[in-house]
Amino acid sequence: MSMTNYDSLKQIKIGFAPTRRNIFSATAAIEFANKTREKLDELGVNYVDIKEVNDDGLLYDDDGLEKITEKFKKAKIDGLFIANENFGTEYEVARLAAKLNVPVLLWGPKDEAPAPDGSRRRDTQCGLFAIGKVLRHFNVPFTYIKNSDIDDPAFSRGMIDFIKVCNVVKTFKNTRILQIGTRPFDFWSVIVNEGELLEKFGIQLSPIPLGELTSYMYELIDKKDSRIEETKETYRNWADIKIKDEDFTKVAALKLAMQDKMKEYGCNAGTIQCWTELQREIGILPYASEALLQTEGMPVTCETDINGAISELLAESATLGDERAIFADVNCRHPENENGELLQHLGTFAFQTAKNRPILPPSHFVFDYPGSAAFEAKDGTYTLVRFDGDHGKYSMLIGNAKTCDGPYEQGTYAWFQFKDLNRFEAKYVYGPYIHHMAGVRADVVPILAEACKYINVSPDYYDPIKDKVAAYWYGDLDSILDDEQKHK
Image (cartoon, rainbow, N blue to C red; front, side, top):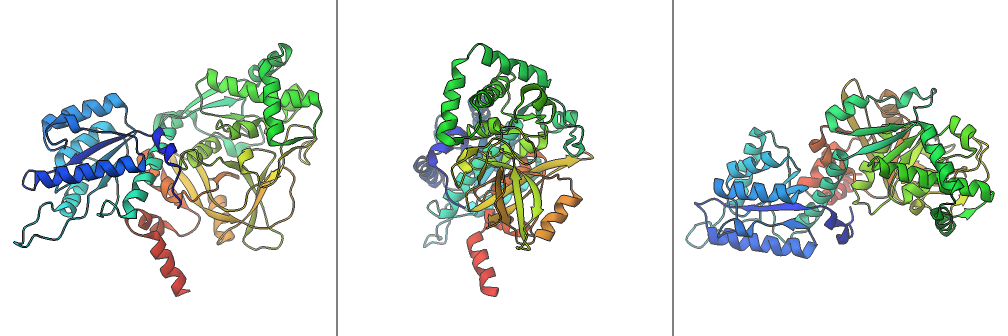
């Protein structure tokens, strides 16, 4: 996995709680806590420190615990970083983590060699074992970085990846989705349990009738809202426009209408009943409007696919927003490549994902209306994601696939090669997944898998990579993959 833009790290706030235990050297613990602070500064981490809670700036007693808890809650931290600077005080660490209910990262700097007289100053690794056990007693899920030197690449990678995990968790727990219209009758596969999403995960839906959107869209057109022309110019910057100006105006107005309604109802994503009543009311398809919303970080999915919108939010948040998503139908097998599969839709890919210059065409073979978008997605390795569930159980299907050559397709599309398409297909047939999937051009499988432990969702893989994903966090995945290649 590649490092992210460090500027993106600032959107997540980490509570930094270095800890020590009295029987080991306080001076050494303070020294290593300061080294940790310097490294966090170097990485560009946005963290809340505890230097003022006591003379050491470390967690080790109840008095410090109360001050730290109050400070972190007031700061509204998104994650907790426990740096075990010597053996650490495991019960204070667990008490703090249990009070905060945020993702927890545990790490300790590798111990020096014993002194010539045989004494040791810190015993950090042993303390990690104790802290891990007590966190389990407190039912606190946590992530850890292997016991390593502060300048070991494992620390930097683990810290940045933990911030991405925090962003996934934060996004998931603060999701509210604008549901525009009911699901199309023919799409029973997108049935969701609204009450269950709220009760289990705190995910809220804001349903509005289709007419509320379309009447507001016409309002914007009738009053000649100045943003319509601005939006049309934005489209021209991204794409070649091949539709009549009257229809183009509707595309821009529909984009603004969905955007305004998401803001009005406090939503970070939306879904829409995209056919066929919508076409009777306004005469266009919504997909080009969705494409620009996707581009601007306000994803809207089709066929009122609520779980699809959640999938897209998860995929993008795992990249800290550095990559925009495609949202696609998983459609058909490649005519020649036995492990190739078509992922496509009528325009629900963000424009940033385009390999060639996008087009707004006059129609699409599925629906003879304007309002779609057309381009092929960029080449590369993608993480594909589907959050879904039924019968009270929820899981996230995740894995990687690489783009491959394939026939031209109308709309937005990409051909992907899987390691074993039969295995992927079986996962989809047996469910609980449906034919819609989100994807980002980055390898964020370990990030999403680790986030699952904090959101009460089971990670699921369409390739047998569970052990490799676990090894990414506590080992060196690159070495594991190298060993695999040697044995081939």
